[in-house]
Length: 394
Image (cartoon, rainbow, N blue to C red; front, side, top):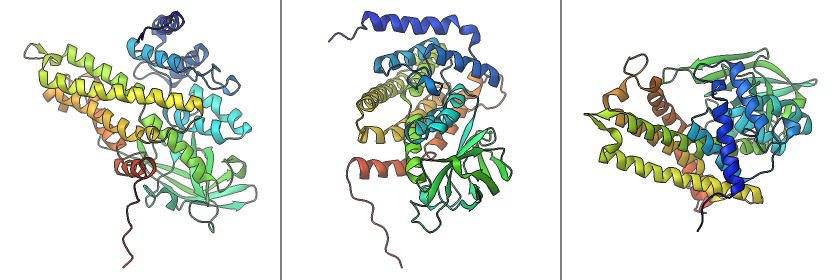
């Protein structure tokens, strides 16, 4: 089997790498301003290395889907070390949701600015009493003229303290069954009546927040997918969230960074990668990353064919989050006593990124649907196993 690239694809791979290296001076580094990040993202979209297949009418590049081109672009970012295209809740979750179920006005208004990074989004899903059972949410809205008036609370709302906008699940049909009475609203985080309270995690940072809504007025036109259809729209977003959290390109980039670390760091004069125990762990994780990468290509193929991913799609979030945590754990263990340093120690490696990732990724095994919930979904929907029996009411 000849796995060599054809001349066309070889030239394309060379073109992408050349672009990234030629623009090295414009790479936004740690602490880059929002303007610098937007400028880099805009260049990537124009060149076709971000938002490649999103229609130009909505602010994307507008290229035809090509699985191998997408793979070569990802490899170029990994190999050159260039900062990749923007992701997150807006680009990776809301944009594909709007492309699937949004109306034309919503696509025109929100996709382009979101892709460029001009609008930051947060997701208003979980509540103190509605986490794994999301459909039990109690944040409510009643009609008043042309507006919905929202009251309630969300929790674990990532980046709410930074976001410009929110896509939010709200119960608008109080008499409907719990899955049928929810609407998916989008509105500004600057709307009067919104209060954000940061929640500091064990990383030392406040990535998550509590968000309180008190008589927040939102035009009824800002419903996505139709009034009362929020559960269907929410599951579209959750599908893309699972894909984002289990992104094989991110895992491959992390593997490359750990491999570089183990080649450069030494213990007793010997490179870490020459330690047989650590090298064996690295090779096992490399095999898992390759499997995840292959599954990602399978998902791309199924998507282009318009076929359901089935079990292949259901495993992505569980596999990705657990694998990312194992990769960070290897880096921590390989660094030994340096791996437990934190904050501003002069011996800290990579500004403490591995320590931060190790703790944050532990949270992502819970966030976006716990590992236990994901296993239930895989068992019941993917493997056809019976549902877990419910205890009889006493």
